[in-house]
Figure 1 (cartoon, helix red, strand yellow):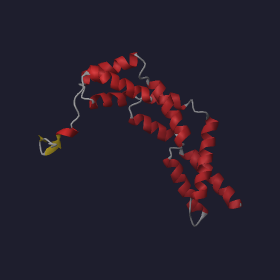
Figure 2: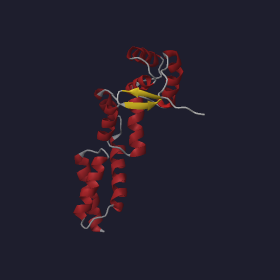
Figure 3: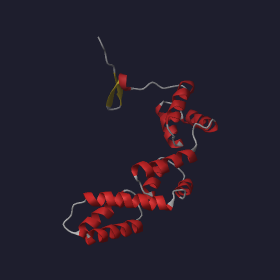
Figure 4: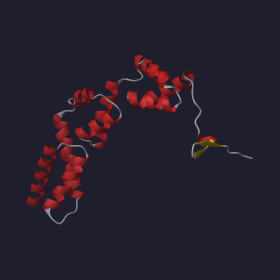
Length: 178
């Protein structure tokens, strides 16, 4: 027979089976090392995970310092991996990458430094490839309507307005000549 204990939290009842046990710093250390080894993480992500394990704020901060010292966490390494990963695999533009990094607590100066490492030629080539692929899929009654849809799509991908307008005009003009 399986029994479930309900615990009263104010006006909410929670199933005791869903309450995660609090870990001690000694129990959390190997888990967080594995978490950091699996893929690059920001300090914010690791601190949040430590807090989810039930560590106090002081214990979480102390462990964070140890993880940085032992090179499990490196904000610059994380930022570089994030920037190049999102750019190459998802085709994100600089603005969307910057927003994603700021959402996980990365310093803006570090973000801008790493974004300058993206080769300008690769960036414009990627924008053109994405724009051409999307152009073939966009439906619209006029070239202008398709151009606006393309611009909206590329802005949503995080590319800057000037580059988006330029590539949309270029592709729509080329399409109109066909």
